[in-house]
Length: 353
Image 1 (tube, helix red, strand yellow):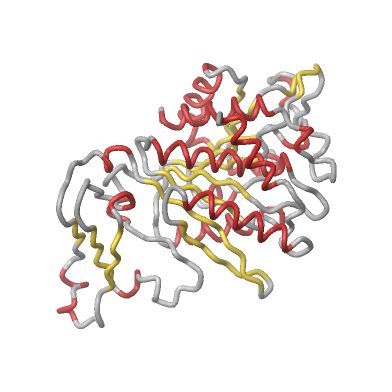
Image 2 (cartoon, rainbow, N blue to C red):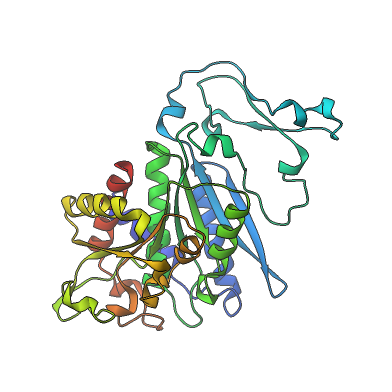
């Protein structure tokens, strides 16, 4: 099965009314579909948060970098904490997490991988809903460096099947998971399906805040936000003033919108995506996007606000797509060849970072 067919299959499963309150059954079905797809490639962690007494889940898949799978180490791999964290310090025991080789940061070809964690890092520590493994030493120049986080929200506004917004982003997220699991990239990959974007970026805000509080670094964050609507008609593309003076008026490109710390990555990704055959434009945004508020309409914005390098990958939403937040946002309005080209270009581009 080729990439285009796999993307279409994902869309068939994801495109439905899936607002977490007004279409709870659809929302649950899509969440389970994403979990099942991710579980093909590794352990899926759940990052839970509460809104108005209701629990919501971000789904997380961590994939190791290329050289960690090629290290050739054998035997047992043990990460020991400093003496002050040992059992001799008076703490009430360590927590040992046994990881299969493919999930270990030091994954050799054989042997057990044992990670000794103090109680405060255990999932049994009582930290409600936060199941992120915090390993600052490895995230700061260690095995593969800091991860590249790729995110897409899976909820939709009430009354819309949400094909472009944002089933396209989730479909590409799942295919990038497949690609980077089969052939790891230079950096660790963290793929996150965010909930509650349509209610004010709530899932990504909570996740970004938790990362900041834990002092976890990121190589880059990419938010996949509507990727499948293309219109080659002149005049089909609109912009916030005065950007129309500098960009094409035909809506047949994918846009990269990043904060100033991502300028190098923006230029490199644009070049790679263009070489793959998909038109691409970039927009560097100063001051967290506050000057052009439309640039903040995605799960990248909470990462901008916390100082992370982050960009949105988008077909520009309502600046092009007349079906945005409408009941007409269906699969038959999408350009699947365009979506396939975006997915291919992103994979090649991310590998080159």
